[in-house]
Length: 530
Image (cartoon, rainbow, N blue to C red; front, top):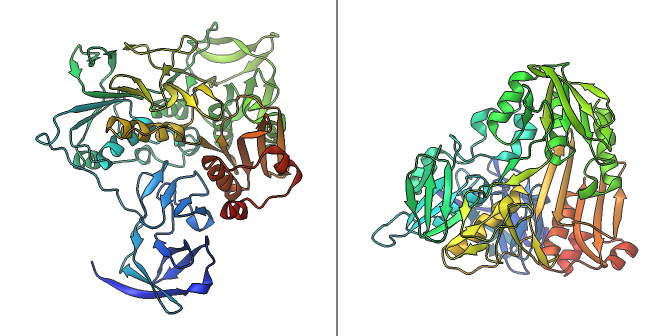
């Protein structure tokens, strides 16, 4: 590849910890000053969704994306945290007097596939199996190859499709803004090239952790040396009269969205049961498709148990400004119709006309096929240790895993897409023999209409919420406090601040509640001083 050296800046153009996107030869690079004498240069956009990394947060050599908190090493370009799958191309930098000189190719690539081992049975005869192709399974398979594992990898799913990005389903896919072929995150050729053997359409009926076997629906049996179970959840169904009528849907897979889109037409009446993130994102998407939408919820505002009254009311006001209606503090008890749903009956007998209904009341861990592991009686999750290990040579990750979450000091189950990806990477490290504890900080996001919410950490309950900014103007950061410590943070219009606070949580350097309450803090500046 032909390269040339280009003077891109002067050393005094950047202070330590600063990021700067620079135009070079009809393209762009990201320049960073890591220390007094050390600079680095990479491609400028996150390899996940293309966010400008210049607006991210640099801590040492680690940069965090401002949108979804993918993290990269700025010296090597290697990705360190999901949801990015690919690394950043990096370019040699040298200093000549006051000049910063970067060696660049003629065409600057946007991303770089991490180095991966190939299957070599003479070097490693082991079989590693992964059940489930959501984020945990997908990231685990790739991480195993990145860690040099040369045995066989089987990536198993009951679905007849490539691993895909579920976060798009209730947003851009339901809005008709992306085609179905844009959902997969990797191609068939990618898995073939890296010797990851996909087994699609293979439903698992039993895993025997003692015998180390997997039994499939067709009664075939596979033996494994190490197994990751990452089967996620299935949508909870209401037990109510009329629930089997046509045009009552859940939303978990692309096929669910396809059925909704085939049914939905402008001016139809859609009823969403549940004010979860899936429910509210679905409400926003169908409203934008021209449907009349009503949300039914037992809470008093959306997201009451997750975000609190004030932030929940902000979301309610946003939705109502786009024509969405709410029926709070009630439940759907019955569905009426002749063959297909025509109305939803509430607890007090009120009848809400409906042409279609979407049930969004949470998921149930898919673990009923497991034997020989410790299952939690309350929700059928798999109990794992800090290495995500459920037993000898068996691991669990994602929505099904109840794992030790250090900030709460107890076993916890968290249903976040990015957390499942984090779990998958750590489980793969341990399957490969690296002995890595899970210490990640959960991070999730939601897009509803034009509003983007970011949330980091995890709070089941709190003593108080401290607000910095104006919730009503949709530009704020909120801190969820328990015992004077920050358990979680959420924000709108303050992506860089949430980014910095998330990194402080990772480093266990978030100031206590008293300081946050009584002092205005520049979070990006604070993390550079920590």
